[in-house]
Amino acid sequence: MFDNLSEKLDKALHVLKGHGQITEINVAETTKEVRRALLDADVNFKIAKEFTNKVREKALGQNVLTTLQPGQLMVKIVKDELTELMGGDAEGINLSGDPSVILMSGLQGSGKTTFSGKLANFLKKKKTKNPLLVACDVYRPAAIDQLHVVGEQIGVEVYSDRENNDPVALAKAGVAHAKANGHNVVIIDTAGRLAVDQQMMDEIASIRDAVQPQETLFVVDSMTGQDAVNTAKAFNDVLNFDGVVLTKLDGDTRGGAAISIKSVVDKPIKFIGTGEKMDAIDVFHPSRMADRILGMGDVVSLVERAQEQFDEEEARKIQKKIAKNRFGFDDFLKQIQQIKKMGSMKDLMGMIPGAGKALKGLDIDDDAFKHIEAIIYSMTPEERATPSKLNASRKKRIAKGSGRTIQEVNQLLKQFEQMSKMMKMMQGGGGKKMMQMMQN
Ligand code: GDP
Image: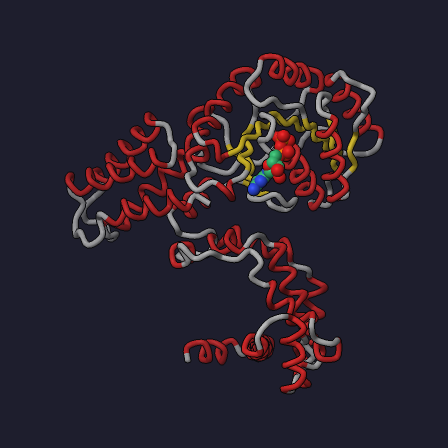
């Protein structure tokens, strides 16, 4: 996410490194580089200019006696300005209606249907919400099928009626169906076109007038940069929507749309899509995003994702097993499964401060655990439960079965052993002992 932009901003902010003082000259040089980085990221010229003017003003206005180094000070100013530009505080969605109606708008291919599913799944996880998805694309039967596939995947009901080709009537019927069947959230997926088109706009506006949604969300593909911003403006002029959903951020190395959209339409970005899977959705937090852009990671989101996947009962079971020295490879596999659910490795790495930069250029395999899994799957249940049984001939068999080398099998066993030791120490309140071990 935003790799190119992060790299360029990092270079720009390096200009001040080693300087003992903020001067007009070094600030001018830095802001010139920052502006270039923003323009390369496909940020609109006017926005980039205003941004750097503000940064310059703030930097020069700082008390020279500040305890921060000029380099650190500049990073802080850029971070604050980026946060402000992207919207300041995070804004949630309005779920006050009964049912609350959420209307999706956007061009075809922007990721509307996928996001409708992701949002339904996201809300469903909050146990008090029972969402209904409504298919209102009457022009493309495939779009209705797609929503049904998505609904099935996440276990959310989909309302559609292939006999009805009036999108307004369909949306109304969907809301009525929700009311009659105890759904407290209705997500309406509408038809998009390949380009901005008056008829499409009129149609969504009529649906909106008919169902009076609490939230009208505009979904846009962030990879389209300036086009995304222009499309947002066209939709907002007609719909006056409540918030933006930026999809495909996982493939967006530039970040221009994320940075510019708020200031152009004056509507907050509310969610981001970071992958094709149903759990690749995040609430948009401007300040966390600014941290990520500046390579500072996003530990808060990382912890939140871990918490989402955290299964208390499972954790208790594992604790017991560790205490009894019965933690085996099956448990290890389960833990890997949980980590995988948190997102792609590259995405997770980007959330660890400094890791993005350190791992730059490395091709992080999304299936980093594939080899480990192959090795474990080649073990017998008995071997998984009691790894100490793994003698030379068993290891050889496992290596052959998994298509990996003996060295890899040995390495995994060693890692497993270290991990088991560490977990046991943590359990025994031996945090101090563990710290000592890590320092050695
Ligand atoms: P719609 O026409 O607006 O309903 O768009 P779709 O939901 O059908 O999405 C179009 C394509 O984009 C599909 O192939 C999706 O899998 C893909 N897609 C949607 N959201 C994301 C995302 O956040 N990341 C990635 N990588 N792909 C996405």
